[in-house]
Every structure is written in C-alpha cells, then in structure tokens.
Length: 91
Image (cartoon, rainbow, N blue to C red; front, side, top):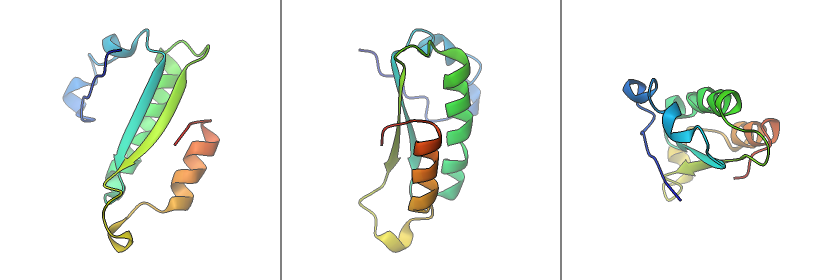
C-alpha cells in the first residue's frame, strides 16, 4: 500500500495524478472546522472519477478535527451526508 498526502496544495495538482493513476481507493479529507476546505472535496471527487479505474474503485470521505467542539464545526452534517450519498462514498 502506498499513501500519498498532497495536502490539497494546488502546486501538486499537475503531477499528483501520476500517484493515483492505478489506485484502488482514495480517502478525500477535509477540515470540519473550515468551510473552505470542504469546497475542495468536489474537485477531488471529480478528479478521481475522471482519472481512475472505476471497476471496484472505492472513495472515502474523512472529516478531520472531529475532536473539536461542535460549535466550532463549519461544515454541516447534512452537506457531508449529501456528498457521501451523491458520490456513493464511505465515511
């Protein structure tokens, strides 16, 4: 297993597809306390759908900073659940 973490950085976007070209799964992460980080999730979902072998490919969505108090969370659970359901992901 190889695990690649690009941190979502735009400077890696041109070369990162080399790393997941033959991937069997992807874990797309976002920060529960930062609405802007969740806005990047759709980009990565689209990227995985375009550039990976869909036969048996698994995508998971992971919200980090889940240890923070609920009042500090900016991404509504309903929005997360909708994205998971729409894209047939695990959470």
